[in-house]
Image 1: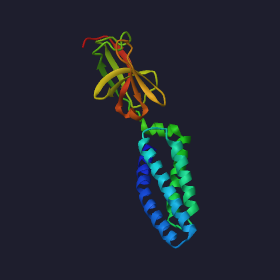
Image 2 (image 1 turned 120 degrees about the vertical axis):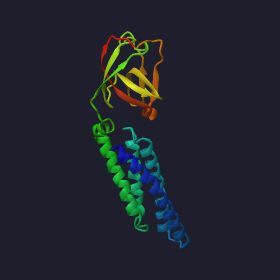
Image 3 (image 1 turned 120 degrees about the horizontal axis):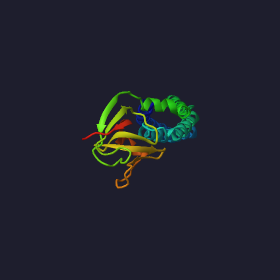
Image 4 (image 1 turned 180 degrees about the vertical axis):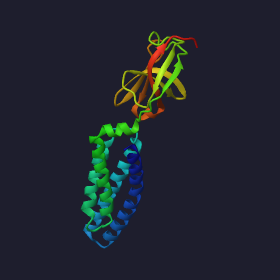
Length: 218
């Protein structure tokens, strides 16, 4: 679903350009001929172009996230209705109205099936790896020098301790999150908690979930 969201967003942005140009041409031609219906069709085409463009921008910006589908749905429904209103005088609007309708239907699918979207964007790969605690950021739960067994995965539940890459640095942190942000929490309070907003969540690469810790020497 995330691929659809990205590709459809790109198509919508590109598609908005010919809608605008042809709407301008139709509006000007009918205005010069003093045909009010054509003027209305051109205006509706402009409205549809703006809505399709806005929907495309949101799709591209939110393609990694589950949110944004309501805005995409509303914009495309209004765009489709605008196209229907001008299709009698401006026949190409039928094609663009159909595209807006398809995007609206897919937005409904993504809203009704968030689990499908989630499973596609966070596929789990099972593999065991070992790491060592090189600092005391997770003491007393994970003492410095202990060997950490990690189950590699791209899926993590809020409250689990995980090994992650963040801004080029490998960290072991407790991760809590909601729809707006994720917290990378050390247990040792002398270390700083890191809050990552949802629009920057791609900066966190999850390596795996900590399953066991053994005492050792680094």
